Length: 394
Image 1 (tube, helix red, strand yellow):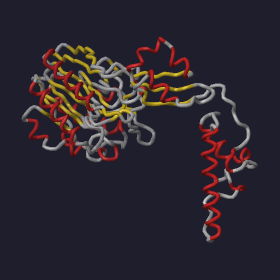
Image 2: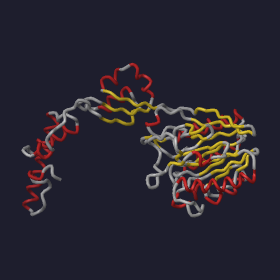
Image 3: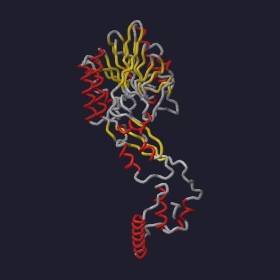
Image 4: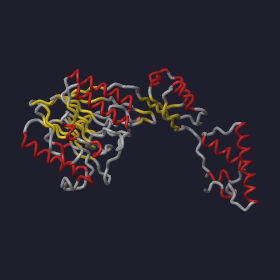
């Protein structure tokens, strides 16, 4: 049996408010081409097919197109639910769809019943929330390790009776895997990790949940997400695993996915970033920029986007900036209302106070509030601003 191990499609996800559906559709194109070129018998998707329990209509349409094209290309498709999926919605009409080559496993009742492809038993394990799955599985403990051990007991019983090679699909955090910022925490009581030995006996374990393609053991691997979902994944090579399972063993080959736009994480003062020729490749990348200027530059995002038009995240980490020793209340106690406003503007700009024009606008605003407050006082209403002695306390 030859199969493609993939997971964590997160259809419907956005990347810092940039929609990913186009990149995800390109990945589907890549999968279909790979199935045809490599003679793939099955595509295994180990959870988090959708990004949310209630996917949008265009997201559902993309999944429908994807599985139809993969089956038409000659591969069976096996989907198991992840912690982002709604098990009930994803599993709708699963028995009927299995007749067409789409095998969806989302319930505890299906655990231990394999999908057999060319003599290889594939055991899809849906994401098992301990609080929900412990009782149906008669787990000895209400933990991720406990429910997975109980699930694997069912798998082992069927495997012992059936014989032959086997593959297990699971959506979990397995000890030894490297995390990234885009994964949802699935810890229970601070414990979520599962030891790889839980899956002992399987010829290959196709994992989902962690977004970096990696191996925990030679035959225990994460495929990772096919597109980046956070800037912490800037160093990832996205793709899937092409796996051959035979009676004599298992061989695994990495298959890289297309990159719609690379990621770049930039750090430094703005003048260096705008002139450094070594940063030319970042001009076409999605960028996360951290500026280290001691004084926050005016119009920083506008300046950066002239060179790096796809900058999505701008952060500030001033180096060498003066650290105030007095509290805000102490610094503003003797200042006028206008001075407080000007000082605040200088504070949020990391040292850049208002221009003469901006000071004039602030002065007009302060005067308007003063006049309005005076009118309110005459009418016995509450004032719109705090008394001077309370300024900075609220």
